[in-house]
Amino acid sequence: MSKFRRLKGMRDLFGEELAKLRRIEGVVRELFRLYGYEEVLTPTLESFELVEAKCGEEIRLRMYAFQDLGGRKVVLRPDMTSPIARFVASELKAKPLPIRLGYIANVFRYDNPQRGRYREFWQAGFELIGSSDPSSDAEILDIACELMERLKLERFTIKIGHVGILYGLLEEAGFEQREQYKIASLIDKGREDEVIPLLDRPSVPRDVREAIKNLFEAKGSPEEVLNVGRRILSRWEKPYSCLENLSQILDLISYRKADFLVYLGFARGLEYYTGMIFEVYVPGFDMAVGGGGRYDELIRLFGGKDLPAVGYSAGMDRLALVLPPFEVEKLPSIVVLPVGREYTRTALEVAARLRKNGLIAQPNVCGWKLSRALSQASKLGYKYAIIIGKEWRENRVAVKDLEKGVQVEVPSEKVFSATSIEDFSEFFPP
Ligand code: AMP
Image 1 (cartoon, rainbow, N blue to C red):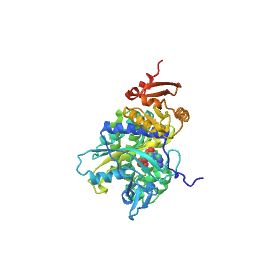
Image 2: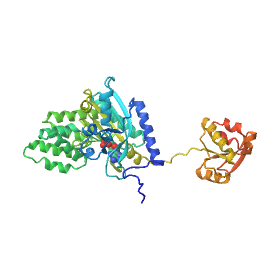
Image 3: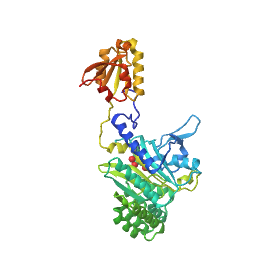
Image 4: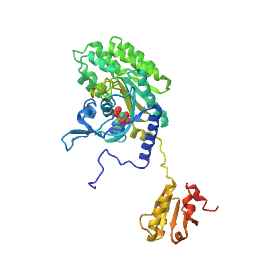
């Protein structure tokens, strides 16, 4: 095998795969416009300290981190929320609130590569900064739903919870913040059963232990689960108020007839979340196609104002995987073939003039004889060939319909007055 191999987990994006990503990008940009999110593009490299601060254990261990030539420890960004929080904290101090920012960016994580999991992948995101009102959480959920609908992925589920519920109870149980994050990371990986034994310390009050165990069972529709939650949490003010916050958000977004799956034991590995959290799923695909939540402390942590924020990040590569297949559209185009070397410059010039008129045109740049160039042109799928030969001196060119195999001679002025490929059909009498 060649030593010049592509790196594991990296992809060369091409053809249908790339076309799908571009289509998603188009839909996302349309949402930026409609919802009024200003696009931002931050650097691919960030300082290690910035990203490490709150990304969480999972990502911390999977960062592409290295020293640059100046001896600084840097990372290829593993997500966009921290860079955006940094940007808002340092650059947008005077911007009136709320701030709505959108991004489309590649991010890097040293994940275990498989279908739907890569080491470089694309995220499209929306960050709404400056409000802690539940209506801002609802707006972010509305965007997540709208994106799915516009991608014609109408069947989706939003798994939703509130990190404050679990953190609140873990605090009651006497767990330090670090331990709380560790537990959240286990839950993020679906390893709730490993959390239960950790609760079996004598210092953890029995009712708190029972309540946490019950959270892991509390999964279902909002109507079912919110009431169960009120019963489980009635004794603890902080977690109870988080549940009420979640309930308000769900009530505000209820005009969307989306399938919300409430999970009270829900936690995510990213440590910057402080409130509502959610993930988007489509049937038949077990990885989340997007995730988001509230992060009220990150911007202050980066030296900015005390700005609450909530955001959503869609995994574009996974969305591309679940999009229905489609053919990459190949637009009809024209090839300009010089009959001999002496017409090469003219062919370049003719192609340039056609493109000025909005036609898709390429000259033959291989120096081939006409017969070879014509047979190659059919294989490459051009619709017409313009052949430049001695007639050029009388301001005439030959035009060949490569699909029908018919050739005509026309004044070059007619070719230059064409503004669309349809005009070429007029050269061929029926
Ligand atoms: P996160 O920043 O972890 O909330 O991730 C947001 C979204 O990015 C996830 O919901 C996935 O759709 C996507 N994602 C995360 N990790 C990967 C990966 N390794 N490869 C492809 N997509 C990913």
